Image 1 (tube, rainbow, N blue to C red):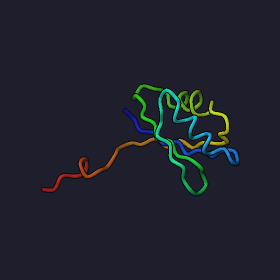
Image 2 (spheres, rainbow, N blue to C red):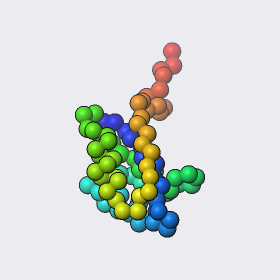
Image 3 (tube, helix red, strand yellow):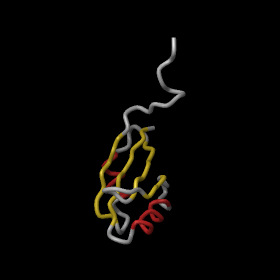
Length: 87
């Protein structure tokens, strides 16, 4: 699985409405409201052979109230369990 984050700018006053609609998508991304340049961040898990552009265009961009998105593709996760081994 590939982890993808989508930063989302919403039309004024519609961030909560957009977040709720995103949460009800079949894929059900995890959505958080954030501060700064974007209003929301959504985390998706995609199969390696899935077309990211089609998922974003057909599922995310289809939600009314979204003004702009920026997609971030994760290459490798680093965590305590997956980090370098001590010798």
